[in-house]
Image (tube, rainbow, N blue to C red; front, side):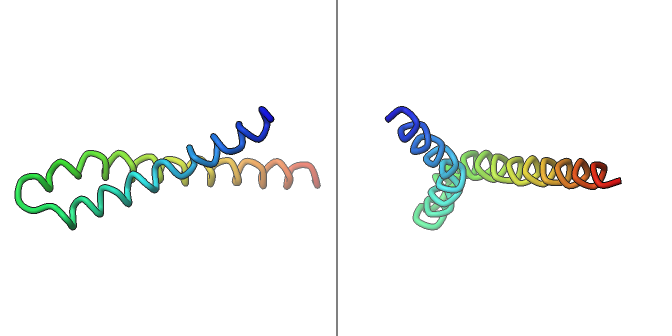
Length: 73
């Protein structure tokens, strides 16, 4: 059961940053005036987390491909 709970937790954590971005975009659309500014920090943080994750994934894939290339030669 612990393995299943862990996989559910990891899935929820993987969705946290995109949901934060989505929620802040929704807030930007629905609010008016100066209260719209309150949606900017979560939007920037969520976007930063998503971009950081993409960059880390690309770096890891590049390292795996390089190590596979070196094992052939």
